[in-house]
Amino acid sequence: MSRTVVFSDGTTVPAIGQGTWFMGEDAARRRYEVAALQAGLESGLTLIDTAEMYADGGAERVVGDALDGRRDRAFLVSKVYPWHAGEPDAIAACERSLRRLKTDYLDLYLLHWRGNIPLEETLRAMDTLQQQGKIRRWGVSNFDCDDLQELLAEEGGRGCASNQVLYHLASRGIEHDLLPECQQLGMPVMAYCPLAQAGRLRGALMTHPLLHQLAQQKSISVAQLLLAWVIRQDGAIAIPKASSIAHIKENTAALNIAFSSDELAMINQAFPPPMSRVPLDMV
Image (cartoon, rainbow, N blue to C red; front, top):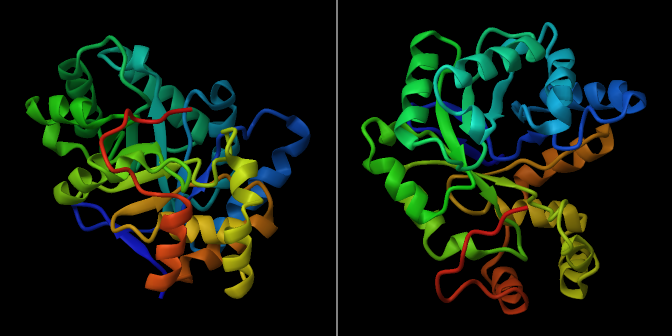
C-alpha cells in the first residue's frame, strides 16, 4: 500500500512529493522540468514544494506552467525568505509567489528559515494571509527543537502545520528529539534532500556496498531504497527533486517499498542513529 501522511486538519498527501530546488535555472531544461512535474501529478505525487528563493522565483514559474489546468490536483507548498516574514512584506512576497505560480492560493506556506524578524510578527502575517484566503496552512522550515518550542509558546504558534528539515540516511540527527516531538504534535516533517542531493555525502550513499546489496536483493535502486527509508517514519514526507519522467516513475514506486526488521538492523549498524542531541543539519 502506498504510504501517505495526514495533516492535523485531516488532509492526506502521498509520503513522497516533488521538490523543485535547482529548477528554473536553465531555460533549455524548462519544458522537461514542466513535463516531469506533470508526470508526477499523473502518478499521484501531488505535493509540489518550491520557494521564492529557488532560481529567484524561476522554480515557481516552472511550477506555474506545470499546474496550468491542473491546480486542483496539487498540494502546493512554497516558502518565504526570513527577511520577508513580517507584515506587510510577507503579504507582498506571497502575492508575488502566487503570480508566478498562476494561482490564487497556496496549500502550505513556510518560513524558509529563521531570521531576525520576531516570530510574533511572522505569525500575524500568516494569520492575515489565511484570513485573506491566500494560504490554507502555514508552517516552518529548518526549525530545531528550541526554535519549535519558542514558536509553540507564541499565541497561535500551535497552528504550525509542518516543519521542513534536512533528513537522509547520513544525517539522522532529527531522530533523537525533533522528529519524535513533531510526531507527538501530529506535525508532519518534510524531508528535503532525502537523497543527500545537495551534500557531499551523496556519493558515499549511492556507492555504499550494503545499500547496493540491499537494493539488489529487493530489485530496486539505491535511490528508491533511500526514499523508502526516509518515509518509513510516521509523518515523514520526502521531497526529492525529479526533473525527468524516469525519476518520477522510480520515486512513485518507492511509496510501496517496505523493510524487514533485519534489513533495518543492518542499515542501523552501517549508519547508526543518534545517541544524543546534535545541532540541526542544514544545507
